[in-house]
Length: 189
Image 1: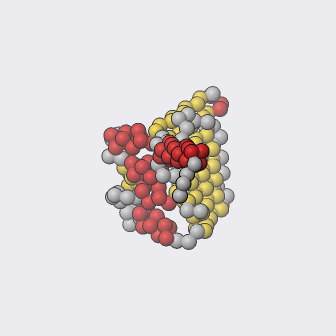
Image 2 (image 1 turned 135 degrees about the vertical axis):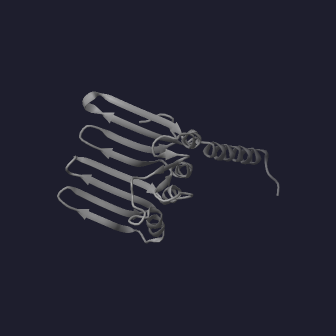
Image 3 (image 1 turned 90 degrees about the horizontal axis):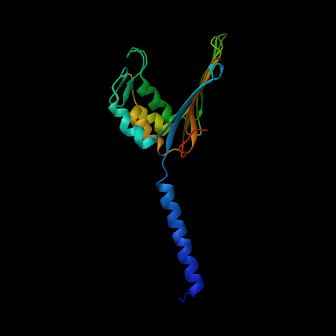
């Protein structure tokens, strides 16, 4: 097979562009962002941290409930709630809505949708909405190599490297809004 000069040049240019695109995509730095705003006081806090930095820093923080990259969750009685067993069961469960509670004070919804764990809470008394969306791989990382009532934050941050741009947590209240998301931009919105 004989290749003409123009065809060969076009093929080389196309291959170079394809390889450059793959290389850029593979080296794109991912960031976790946290934004807290209090409109009444005009306070705004923005945190934009590369996931690679967070992976290194989180295990170095040993304060309060956070130790060695893991956080203790509340004062759960080991006999009443087994977070690991619940997440393992939900991983293999079919998609759908698992919990829906509506009462005078709260609306709560827990579901598995499109490979995501979705939690939506409306706290009517405190006038607060909480939306949490977590990919299953991240949820599974949270319970990897943990003891009772622990979440592995370090492993979850590593797992976030493999998810697309997405909002993870949004809390909207009377006096403040908190948002946590992941993308490839070094600055928040």
